[in-house]
Length: 176
Image (cartoon, rainbow, N blue to C red; front, top):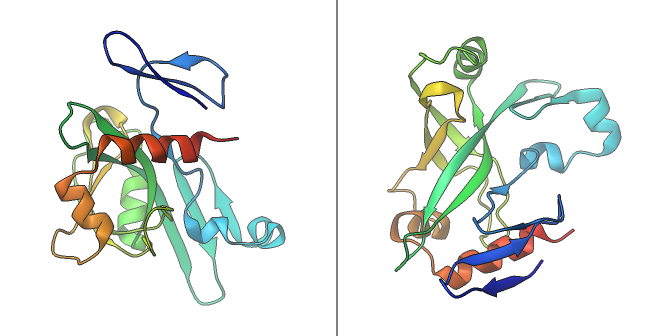
């Protein structure tokens, strides 16, 4: 991964996935919810299902259900925004409604969810309450953390982060 400023001051980076140089910032994506990530390989095989949009973990006394979502982070003093591909847990009713309507481009609704991704720059980002809104055209739902929840991630979401912090996050997540 490298950063370089060109004459028009746009940031470019070399993608660790494809090896190509891009001028737009990549989305910071998490391939699974944290709850899945911490399972052993045996537990993943025996208890869980995961694809690019849904995850279920079958515990002895419950089933944990997660969906892939997006979050847009404001960057202070720039027009840039940092995109995240995160996971949230939903209730059974909300999860089933979303899954049933997953391919319905006219399904508009909102759910309550809990952030279920571990963002390294923050202590314990799991279980931050969020509103989850379905977007038109089958785009991933967008989440909005509850503004009254006292957590540095929530404060940064509403106040923005510096361009330097955004670049550092991209560099950390894009390393092979």
